[in-house]
Length: 268
Image (tube, rainbow, N blue to C red; front, top):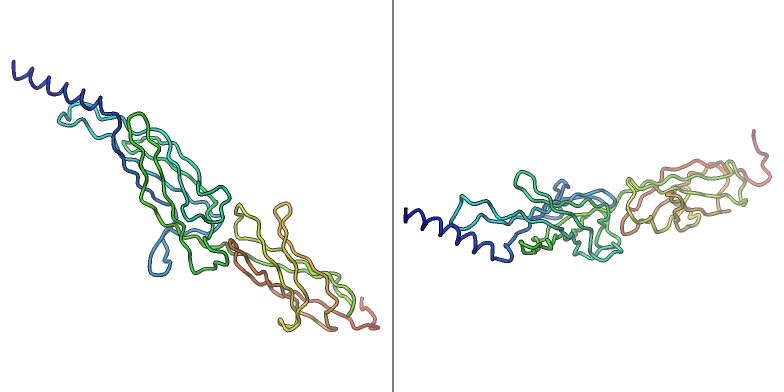
């Protein structure tokens, strides 16, 4: 009987000792939903600008009461996790990507964040690969200490683009103004509009026709210039988009423009 009382007292002491502990240590692990790809000699989760990526922070803490496995475990961590991009890339709102609220299911405590705001770190980036550094910070609660994850690399490609070019009027006359208009379309829409310029050429790029800055209105990105430099005959016009930090450069397919010489009657 005395032995039983002694064991009970010991269990109560463990409970009191654990209950009097203000905070339980925690750890945070971070994963990305993106598939792995090589950047140089190393593999990273890889996405492109404007592509949604989900980060999952798993918070571990709340060990069972020491010395008494028969007692219930310490409560699972609760509260929020803040996700950061420590690369200080093109995002306007500092390094904070957003927050997620912890939930526990089947004994696993996680918070998630889905973002489309990751951008290549260096302006002028193409397909060689740059890596953002993502981390998660658990803020803690009344029972659990806050802590940070080990940073995770996220490779971010610039988004690819396509260019379509149109000339009007068509046909036209040499030395008469011809309007050239392009539409630049990204493969997916990111938070930032396309910037940069477009250059226009004819005759397989041998004749420069002019350039124009791109602008975006109602989600459509265009650039327009007017030229009188088209030679008489059949011209093949192309347009080159220069690209920017988030979107790759691209070249249009050629469009055929018929240019009549001055004094040549228009054929119907």
